[in-house]
Image 1 (cartoon, rainbow, N blue to C red):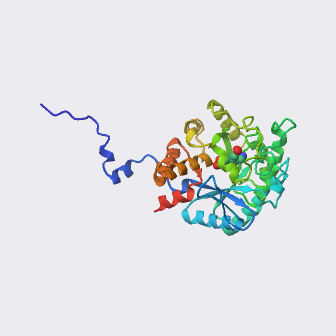
Image 2 (cartoon, helix red, strand yellow):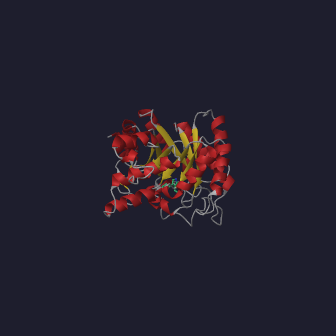
Image 3 (cartoon, protein in one colour):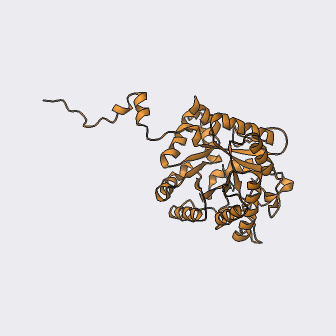
Length: 329
Ligand code: PBG
């Protein structure tokens, strides 16, 4: 009588580290990371209370972070301005001032570290007194087409300053096409567009709003333009429109709670898909670590790998520098 044994032993290839590495289906490297950072006026680093470990930096500090990104092998950084409150207005016109904080930061980075990609957010919320991403009517409704015209001016100012990737995060209909057309006409034919294509009206953006100084300003919510978390099919329509309008890549945001959307988008379109592991997700990991409920390095690398497994080309994450250090070790 022969002893019974499993027909297949999936544990065989897991038994040794060399073997696990050999059969790994996905790899995570520092080239998969995009590092979001906050720029402010003034001359000192300002820690963001709700994002422990994340600061706003003056332009000189942002340039240092860009150098750090380059030395860590992080290909691209994403910039968000904390606009001084006296420069915010109802119509957010500071957004397209060619000398605004954002444009000055872009120029300084491209001057000092030209080989690091600079991704810039297009939306009016860091510039408006009401905290919305666009122009509002008397009832507080965000106007689509009028907003789109302002976003085009904002995108052109950023491209003029040297931005490599324009990332509209406002969720207006038709803005990708409008921006693409204006970039072509302006001669910026190699400036990429990464569309925040499937951006949800999420409770995970809280710490970001503190970081760009729009918390407390926001009137109402963003549900008339950002997507309903109940919807997945609609994300595919958003992506297909943004691609048809000229987006080079698309983003899903937030990240971990929307990996099903990443997978569906990747399967349906086979284009570069990015995810934004947003501020609230970062804060949750840090809170778990502070509570002794988890190991930071493990949580960071596991969540980032999950994005790769779902089909992402890369991830925007506030843990980018920490993750790159772990990955490069
Ligand atoms: C602005 C914008 C937001 C984020 C990125 N761009 C906030 C929002 O839509 O309210 C959130 C990023 C984060 O939470 O890390 N349109």
